[in-house]
Image 1: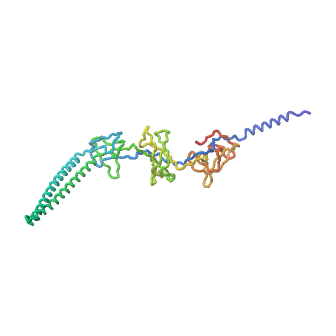
Image 2: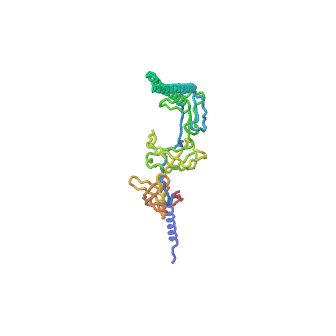
Image 3: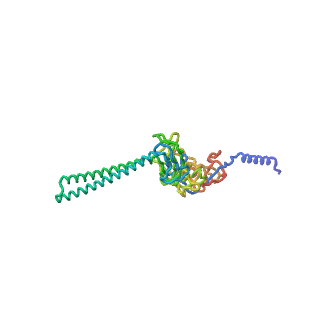
Length: 389
């Protein structure tokens, strides 16, 4: 019996066409980026909302206490000066003359006091002689009375002359203080950052409530700190002594370890800006090549909590829950299908987050959540593995 070839060929062609159509029409797996769940360390970090600033521990914007013409200007920008060194002096010959006059008057007062006290001593000795003569009945009562009165008057004149000498010495102090107001000296050792003024120019002190540029800007470059604004929402988590990491644009990729030394006891409310709390961070080992400069911009990250040996996933893989809903991640299973998984999270930052429940080490979570076709039940294939740092 012969089997017809035609129908069999038609059947085979139909099966082949159906298989080809099925293969061609079935959904292709979605290529996704994944990261493997691992155990590691996670830090909770608070960062500044705006760029921080490097500031000197001591900085004085100095100006004379009185107006006048600049007569001496030994300080120049960039000079290193010691505490007490003269920076600027106004024309003060009149004040110097007044001080010298006060000194001469003080000397004269001292001399008059010495003379008055010598006379008082002489009067006291005369009174003592008269008393001895009276004991021998060789002096009258009237003579003794005159001698004792003269001795008392001499003592009073001596005290008055000494008081006058002290007043004259005080006048010297007043003249010295007035002269000192015309001189500007360094309150501490440091570097002269800026000098505003030239010889023979006239300077005036700032009127009340109207700030004017300082005559000399002095910076103590032996000590610096970072002042950075922290959003009021995060400020409550920062504590004195917290570790901080500082990066500065001037030092490229270098990172410096510091510590929080001060937290402002008030909130800054600046117009058109978020309310912030200023913190101060001291770098443990400041750079010296090149050295820090006041005014550098800086970014600060404060480590407020640390979790060790915990499950870690990239923060980008987490879909935050709304309201009472739990957080979720998309997991790529061993069967090549995507599945949504509810998880419980712990502390985290913008790079890594701790997972306390819902995942196991070795599972793969999806990072490319915004790609078309990434949904529960879809077939997927990992295009690469991005393990947490």
